[in-house]
Image 1: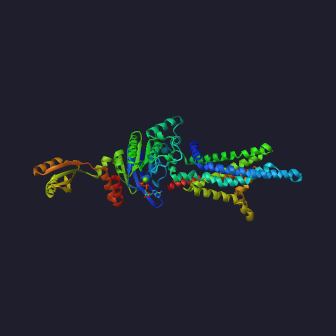
Image 2: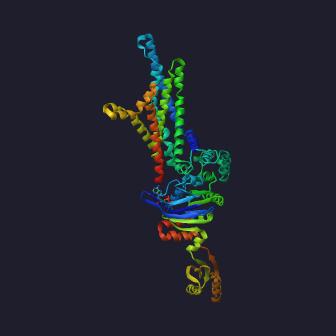
Length: 324
Length: 256
Ligand SMILES: Nc1ncnc2c1ncn2[C@@H]1O[C@H](COP(=O)(O)OP(=O)(O)O)[C@@H](O)[C@H]1O
Ligand SMILES: [Mg+2]
């Protein structure tokens, strides 16, 4: 539904994105994840036909964004980063204007507008001036204008930025409800958002795509290991050595020691479950086994590994923010 | 064709913001004031001529009241006030970012421009139509030459259409409405006075300057002289400004 190939954009001397390639299958919600300044908005502005790329090509809903821009624009709904709306218009008339410009037929228009106002829950403010609305309402009006023509593809640039936690939850569930009927690409610099809303992810950093795919497969790709956490009361050096002796174990790290118990993180080859062996080992050595569990790798760790691996400072900050 | 929804949207925005009302108010008050002054002056002159018939041979209401009204006064007013109507057309959208949505809707750039242009021209037409009140009042107690009056109105509409197109172009150049208004005013003022250099310069260049001058062309309409070269002047200026505005919007897309 979205195919992007070697997209590059220069702003004067600044190269915002370079050779960006990815694709999004129909009906999917894909997260476009990256720290601030990574080039997310630039990519989305090209996909939405707001501006042409310097080189490379992109097809959205089967049409080229540059050569068949009008065809693409008939099939998309776009929500820019700062949600620019006409503050001096009222919500209802504004949505009717958008519906008309987007070619919703006169007979359908009233019904469509009423429908999206209901779905985005802005019907109670339909007679208010947009400029007097709270950020959360404005965001929902922005979403309403994006979906009012029932487009095949939705391009949402940081749809939850600047909202309070309750509003964020609302917007996310609204976006989730769009899956299936629409193909959605949404950009964000907040990690948990991707795991919560999206089925796939494209990670972009400093203008280049560094990873993409379904979230689970990305985790496997970047963490080709199975991880187990154990808490054992016993002499740490001996515990460490004996666990390392189990076949398939790649590394053991002890994390902290309290009241004679230590916590160990055991990495084993993927597909290898070493929990039973650790249990038997502890029983045999008469160590007290306080805890034994498998730890799932998270997207957050993938992100930190990819982004922080390339550069310390800025990405660390983004990761910290993402964790918050 | 998506011109109509853009037109309606612009009209709606003019209706909700104070600037259009302020412009209408100032225009009509100043026009009315001048009208009454000229009328007073004319009444006095005609009284004097009634006492002394040899003086009043050439006294003509259309010539002495309507021509200055169409000629200088309305030109000054249109020149000074129209920039305030056109300045927001593109600059505001760029400043607030709404242009990013507008230009990603399935509507061609020239349709956006034409919708905006026709909206402000429609507003201007309403404004000019409101001043019909003055000749109608005049016609109540004097014999007006309606042909001349209509030619004056045609001139005003043609001149306005070119001024508004220049304003639209200026608004495409910047994100600041004030800067757009200043450019519009500057360009129009220059076009208005450029003919003054014609006499001293003389020759071909003098003719060129004279042809470029708005003042030169508008006065013919006010006099009731319809000439295709005057009509063409305004039409050409309008088309040129609209074309430049179009190119400017296209160019801005590339810059992102
Ligand atoms: N209009 C512009 N002119 C110049 N540089 C820009 C412009 N827009 C974005 N950039 C630069 O391009 C890079 C990518 O920006 P952007 O796409 O907005 O990133 P993101 O949305 O991921 O935060 C940044 O370095 C930014 O400074
Ligand atoms: Mg951005």
